[in-house]
Length: 254
Image (cartoon, rainbow, N blue to C red; front, side):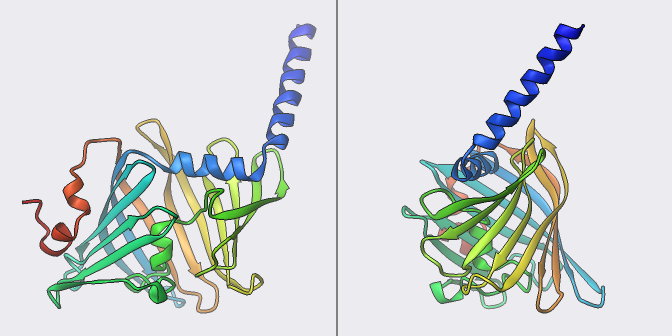
């Protein structure tokens, strides 16, 4: 028994050394890997939370597909009636840029989101158009620095090489799952905290660790947006036709 306990202690010590030795860019690469799948279909409840506590709920569905390392996503608003059938398309390009379009049923037309609009609010939420594309960076897009570490998590600062919306982010990553537990978004000055994304509940879907409930809060206004995953499917076949301007504008595959 003593020998067994000693062996376990040595294994735990060795494991802690492995965690400590992992560079920040490898941690963030793993974060990206965990969050990426060949395809996903998510049913979501989006709740807009006013500073006074008043809430407005919206139901949305998000489809995504990754091919050759590039991800396309489609978001469709299901309710309430005043935003129903609003559709948003984001297509990742080589080099880390994204082409984005939004279809507004009231106008019966789509328009492209310009680069100057990437920091703007997405449908009145605390998520920007840039946030809808990604909330983390890979090693080709940012410099990652390990700020702190404990037994359960890393705290990593990411400074993007091309600063458009944020000057830096600070992410707390859970070691057991590589899920972001908290992300702080800083202004282009690198010092002013703009928004905070907090994971409230995690779980699994098809054996994959996922964030089930998260909240994005805008620090200056106190306004917040909560996203809750009601249903999730990963790596199921999806038609590439969903990720086209034709579907964006018509809502039909054929």
